[in-house]
Amino acid sequence: MLTKHRLLPVLLLLMLSGCSIEPWVQPYERARLADPIMSFERDPVANGFRHHVYQTREAARGAEGGGGGGCGCN
Amino acid sequence: MALKVVEEAVVAVTEPGVLIHRIAVLFSPGRHWLLLILASLPGFSLFATVLPEDRADVMYHRYDGGGVEVDGPSILVRKSVMDTVSLSANYYVDSISSASVDVVSTASPYTEERTETSLSMDYLHNKTLMSLALTKSDESDYLSETGSFSISHDMFGDLTTVSLGYSVGNDDISRNGDADFGDQVKRQNYRVSLSQILTKNTILGVGWETITDEGFLNNPYRSYRYRDPLAGDGYSYLPEVYPRTRTSNALALRLKYYLPYRAALSSEYRYFNDTWGIDANNFELAYTHPFREKWIFDIHYRYYTQEGADFYSDLFSRRAPQTYLARDKELSSFQSHTLGLAMSYEIKPGFLQFVDRGTLNLAYDYIHFDYDDFRDLTRGGVVGEEPFYSFSANVIKAYVSIWY
Image (cartoon, rainbow over the protein chains, first blue to last red):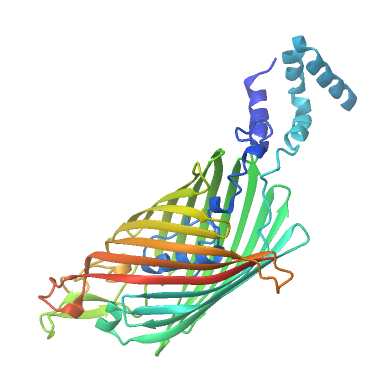
């Protein structure tokens, strides 16, 4: 009999692996997402400078994405 | 034993009537190893984690606003070694000339230079990308060294990428013209982020970062202002005093949407708070439009607003009325608006045979800052009733990128 305590670790494992999830956007449907205009960080060197300007003038910091964080710029 | 398990699995698949019973047998405690093997089988890989592209960027950057001019070069080179390792190096310079409103009020204009160098290594193993980076920033009165580690992994049919990151940094602070002063800061950053494909046109990004600082956290040259009946102006200055610890949290949400024609809309929202009582929100909207084959145009607007630190005041009622005292305008309440334009033109430099393609890029940002409780003392007025400060900045980035 399949008891709850046996099923739980199995479900956790499958969730972690991702094998059990059927992707709702298939690989062949991702052409638009692969277009460079859809990149969050198209030009890292320009984005790094942009974050630096804001970090210098504003108190907020962190979660900039990509190149942000830990720039040591005060 | 292994043969028996396979036989059971085959029977389970070929005879649906016994499927449930057979699955139950497979899930029995002694056979979790089989599930481990199943669970570790590779999933879909067409959109999987890959190493960053081999590219080089050479940029000239310039910031001009509020009496501060900063410019310099930034050079980034990235190259993969075999199919699993990518190395990168960045050299960045800020040449600063400052006569900002607070400098003019309390000190003399100055010039200085900051140089930042960083090296990083990315290692790809199946669907997992591990990155290690070392950064050193050097100026005459501030030396900073930072080490970062991050790991990102694709899962759920590569619809989801989860990243974890940690950085630790040590700063040595001195004060030009004061050989007796020296102090340190230790910084630690903890990052979690998630990138999620929502539909065939939409990507969602979520990021969280907690940063802790310990040490000397104020600018050693800045002062607070207090009412002083004995002074000719009616006020005097003393060095700022900040807490020696600060912890901040930031949560960012990003959405990128591919329009029905070839163009993209993106938006970003970030919430920030810290243990100094600062709350900040920013919102951004951007539109990216390719034109013909070679051009890409971007336009973006960003709004930022913050509530100042608990211990900030433009004018304290008297000398040292509280433990912590700040009059740094970056800790005050203010709003800023940014309007930016950027363009990119693709080139194929035929004379460089190893280059696949390149781009010429120019970007301009106009930023306007409006302060709610930082007063402009250069414009005079009754003490404590001077006009509020505001200023605009022009930011230019001109860069060449090549892919090879």
